[in-house]
Each structure stands twice: as structure tokens, then as C-alpha cells.
Amino acid sequence: MALFGSAFVVGKLVLDANVPPLLFGALRLLIVFICLIPFWKFEIPPKKYFKSLITFSLSMGVGVTMFMYLAIDESAIVSPIIIGAPLAIPFGIIFSSMLLKETISRKKWFFVVSAFIGIIIVGFDPKIVDNIFALVLTALMAFFYGISNVISRQINNIRVVTQTSIMSLIGLIILFLLSYFFEDHMIDNIKNIRFDVWLLIFHAGLIVSVIAHMSLFYLYKFYTIGTVFPYYSLFPIFGIIQTLIIFQEIPTLITILGGIIVISSVFMLQKIR
Image 1 (cartoon, rainbow, N blue to C red):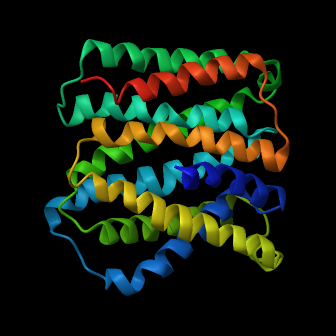
Image 2: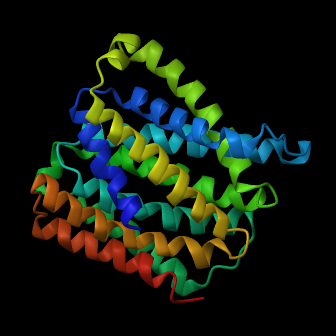
Image 3: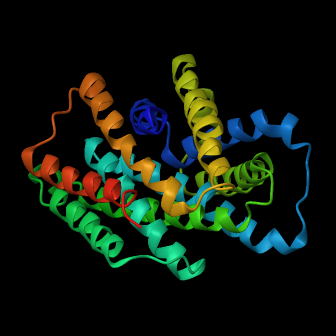
């Protein structure tokens, strides 16, 4: 979970080094794709999985990556983005109920609602008022993350390496195209990336995407989303500690209150059936 938390801190460091968000996302996925080529071996899954695999690739490779970096780039502070990201858990549970017909108890619905109330409270933080659009982008990131985790259950007979390779290939192509058309001077931006910034991009691609995310998706082969995904709720604790150390961000009381509600809600989702 510490690796998931580091993704937001590393993201802010890279974006502050004048790397555009869409380009950053494309480069991250390019690193993922290159790292997985020797293990993927260009294996093509059965046609019956194509629709789910493409949906997974668009939601995880494009939706999550794009909105995550747009949110971080939009916000002057990182901690509210980290707190808002666990909304992926209630979104995931909602979608698992709708798409996979998993049974969700009334107690779980209560904590799903309370998680959203928590992020609304965070939105009233005076520091967030000028960055409220960043919270909207964060909610969109969580929305797509929830979808991708549900869809991954529908393709759990496909090797995780194959899933991630195809997802990263589709995602990097789309994000490079979006960067080319909507972000100025893409080639010059790539040339101007410093060596230390490249190391941070490699961290985001190799450590976070390849190791952390693939480990999460691998667990879905053996456990339900309701069992695995709520553990994801632990990452904001590590992420906020990292922002405190690196950026000296001290959350306000209202952000702490909203954060406690969000994190407690998603944590309780793993304790009840």
C-alpha cells in the first residue's frame, strides 16, 4: 500500500518538473509495456474476452491514468487527492453489485454512502475551494478505477501479464495521441525531461504499475473484489505521510475529519459481509 501512496507524491514531483500530465501518463504506460514484453510474448486471448479486455484497458489505461495526473496537476496540494482516491472502493462495490451481481449488505451500503459524505466534507476545506475541480477529476479517476477492478474479475482467466500488457499498449497509444493534439510541443517536452525526473517516471511505471497493480489484479483470481479491494484503503495513510515529509503539507482539521470518515468507511467495508 505504501507503493500506491507513493504514486501521488511521485506524480506531483514529475508534474512540477514541467512534464505535461497526458505525456506523463503515456510515458508511464510505455515503461510498463516495455517491461512486460518479454513476459507477454504477444499472447492474444480468446475472442470472448475482447469486449471486457478493451473496456478494462480504456478504464484503467486511459481513464484512471489520465484523470489521476490531471487532478494532481490541477491541485496545488496533494493530500486531498490522495484522500479522494479511495472512492474507487465504494465505486468498485457498486459496480460489482450491478455487473457481477455480488450481494452487498445494507451495512456495506451504509459505509459506501458515508465514504462519499467524507469526500464532500473534504471539499469544504478552504484550501480546496480554489482546487475543487481537482476533486471532481479525482472522483472521475476513482470512478474508472472502480470499473477497471470490476471488469478485471471478468477477465481473470487471462494471465495478469497479458491483461496489463494489452492495457498499457492501448493506453499509451491513446494518451500519446491526446498529448500530441492537446499538449504543446510533445517531442520537445520529452527531450527536456531531466535524468532525475526519468527515474521518477520509471518508479511510477515499474514499481507502482508493474509490481503493485499487477499484484492487486493477481489476487482477483482467488478472492472477490469485496475481499481484496478494501485493503486498498490503507494507501492514503502512507501517501499523506509521504506528502508531509516531502512537501511539508499539513492537512487542515476539516480535511482530517473528512479523511477519517473516508478511510474508516472503506476500511469497514472489508470487515462486514
